[in-house]
Image 1 (cartoon, rainbow, N blue to C red):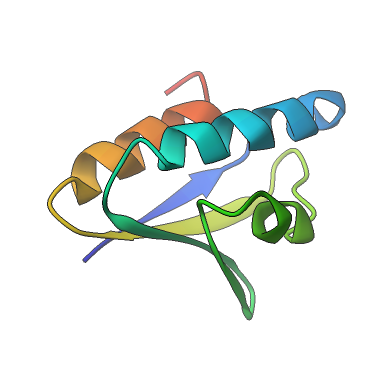
Image 2 (cartoon, helix red, strand yellow):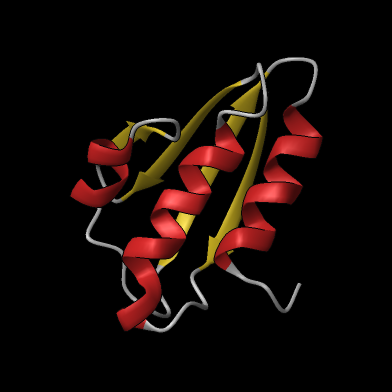
Length: 85
């Protein structure tokens, strides 16, 4: 299992579109992926779950992936939330 902390660098007005793209990207991988913030943890492949996180610019999230593609999945999802990486 791999874990990575990511800072959201998407302007707030674009976060809903970014969330949709994030879900599509997460579903490209067979790994089990979660997004966590404070005491809330959701399946990264669930749009409703991700929207319930109420993402905001500058927010810190923990991404966790378990499976053969875990490293690749975390890198790809970090790129969605922080395109400058």
